Length: 578
Image 1 (spheres, rainbow, N blue to C red):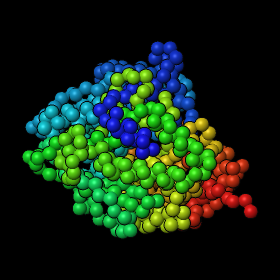
Image 2 (cartoon, one colour):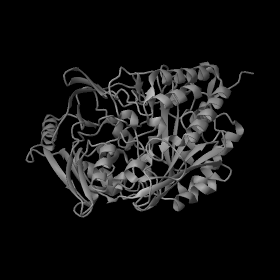
Image 3 (cartoon, rainbow, N blue to C red):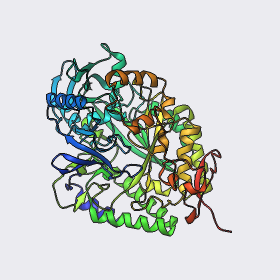
Image 4 (cartoon, rainbow, N blue to C red):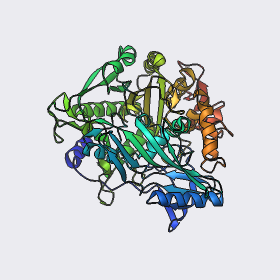
């Protein structure tokens, strides 16, 4: 592992990679299509189909597309340039629906430096948004760390950075106006363009800020920005002895604080990250190493090693590799540099546009997949689950201590998380968006191994991850990230939102025929059916919580048993034959 990581670091710090695949594939032109996400698989591994895909280049073209589909009574869903959402947000029902891609809706509409506002089309990526704001000497204060997301995608799923300061870290809370194209009546020509703002139509505005793509197609978004500033960043690794206490208060001390937790190693990397004046010296760059181009052969070898460890039960080797990886990443400051080239020491000071997000593997020339983003489904690379749950700050200490109790039972149980860089933990706060966060929370982002070939293959320490997932959702009332997670995380979650009914009323006003709704979105909104899928082996992929042994892998010794710390959990546990 160390050899391959060093090789990648030396040769591909500045290299370009093969661009990501287009999530939409069609048999004939733009008809008879399938759609997936950037990882190549949805949680239930289903194939999503559509009659055709449309690529509007202007709002006028978008209006025509929505009008024609509404007149024909066709289902519609929006797909973004890279389609990063893990759940089935892009899927239509059946084969007769229409996909509307925002790939070419990627322009700046207008700027107003005096008002500090910037209006862009919804297909603009976060990277473009950051760059365009910087041209005006302005900055978006908070954002996700991966800049391959689009404005519409971030609005659809409630994407966020990390902060308890100001209005919080959610991108949608720095939006002042939304233009959205929705189905209309016959008298309206089957289409209606809504212009939404807090002052003019607050109900529709707060519904559209986190819309799940259910209200229509977002055409344009206006952001309220801030004068450009700089940040001062230091990473500090500590023992996790008092992490429960520190996690509750650290976010009040540092504006952009976050954590990388290595629970099996008993370590936490604290991000000490604060705003400093724009005239402070420094030209630092946040170029997160795992988001850089990587040699496809090296990524494939690393994946093959992990698959061998999983099949042979080699937890010790997995833990050894995780320690080497953690040490390597910390030693290279996770890719942060003082001048865009090398790291010379902390603090790293740089302007907000250079310090907030990255994604160098998108800077791409076609090189036959010699290099790629490490999760590109066209190579045998990373393939994982991503469980992202926001635990209320009032419960965070107990949740962390429960996880530590699990590690005490089996120290090797969470090494798999550390092979995926550790548990990323970010601060979020309450939002007026109807489907935004309800209260101050810490978002725990857990990435872990998934079998690429066989959904009925259990993971090493399967039960530990399942218990953490259920503990967060059921014991500590956590909210799932709308753009991540396995099916079970969304079961009953709509009941945790105090403004859920207000959202549904707006949904009925903007799309009364439900043309932008699907069976899956109806399920997560609690309108029809259940998002869980009960069948043989369903608990292995997070499609259900096991209630009998057949939901696990009894032929491989995995049975449905109570949790070890959270006894109410029901998890797939490897039972020794006696």
